[in-house]
Length: 184
Image (tube, rainbow, N blue to C red; front, side, top):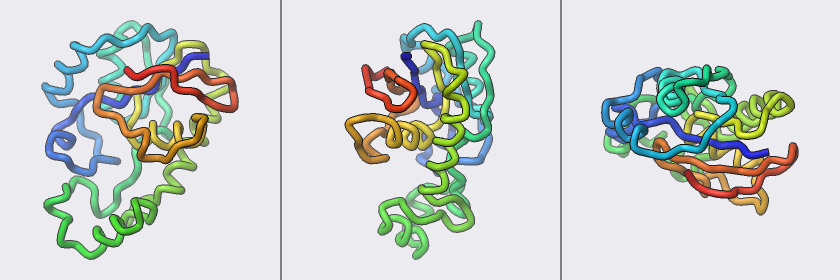
């Protein structure tokens, strides 16, 4: 079956390059207008993270589809880094430790990559038996990276699947593995 993984449109925090995980901010005007200019594939069903930016993106792209909201697909909890950007964190020793870990260690007071990935992959696996061909997932960049790192063959690393706001991947899913068939 064909699945689509779309990262939500831009928010004010994205424009300022902030770590926006659990913050429930809406799309910014630029984010809305950019989504309206992109041609998206037809979807028979839509699944979304519960955060406003994802639900709003899903409704803009597929206004005739009510998204199924799945809380396990929400973005990583960035803990003490939430809402901050590189310039604000650059001098903090705990930020340098996180950078030096290659993004693997836990954010102070937040999730580590391994736990975050396990949560999002489990949420996807729980949904998988009920998916229909041409299901679109409107989620977060980290969520997309975690799911694709787990299922896509040939295997690549988490950060290799980074995608810009409003963009994503089309994949073929056979129930066990995925193959990327295109970019959106």
